[in-house]
Amino acid sequence: LWAFLVGSFTAVLGAALAYMIVPLPFGEHSVTIAAMLTARHIGGAVNYVSVAQIMRAPPDLQVAGLAADNLVVATYFVFLFWLARSSSSKEPAMEKPMETLRISDVTTVMAMCCGLCSLGMMINSTLPVSIGAIPIISVLQVMLSTLFPATLARLRPSGRLIGGLLMQYFFAATGAGGSLLMVLRQAPSVLAFSAVQLVVHLVMLVLIGRILKLDSKLLYISSNANVGGPTTAAGMAISNRWEELVIPALLSVREVEAGRRSRSH
Image 1: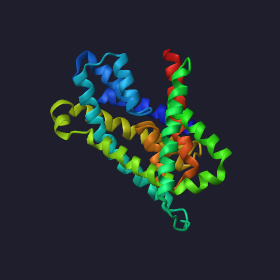
Image 2 (image 1 turned 60 degrees about the horizontal axis):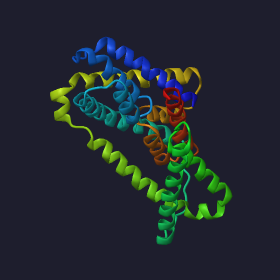
Image 3 (image 1 turned 45 degrees about the vertical axis):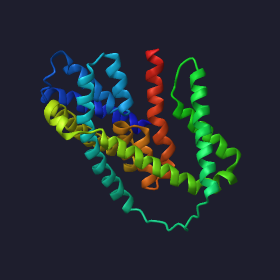
């Protein structure tokens, strides 16, 4: 969580610097788009939409801003995943035995996922203050794994397969949201704003992280959680076999979002 908070601070710092050096030709809505992009880089696109609704941003501004930012974010993810993979390559890789998959296990995992997600959303809907379904679903899954460790261990290979497949769909959908022609016609300044913000964010995050002696893996996961949200951060952790960071990647940003939602209520 501390690494995520440092990343949030550097995202705000990057937004302030970008606002000073990149002119935004949107008149009174220049501050609005800057606030939307700042929120986008402190937890993902959900924050972007939330701030857009609160500030009543025009629909065309929302679409143009998100399209431009998606292009920058997609490029940033490529670079961030390369940094993470370079960091992982320095550690000795451990050979794992081949895991067998069964159709019955795959269907069981899918049924469990649907049941846990439905239960998590039901519980969240009954709370006086919504904290989001993902933290509740994560807690339910941890409880289930604790109560039935042998059964869940047998289902782990199928869970990894389904999770990895859904992650790829998510990344493809994120990339499909960016339109280069739309950006060049409507929001080239947003493209520059977002690029400056992310460059400052990453540089300052790495510098502060070294001063605080934080693990580079934590910094990369935190940056991913800042820019893309918990789903892409968990995808990075899984792809690099940082299994101990999957749950923190999912929960850190949700804890911040839960606090923001409770304050808004």
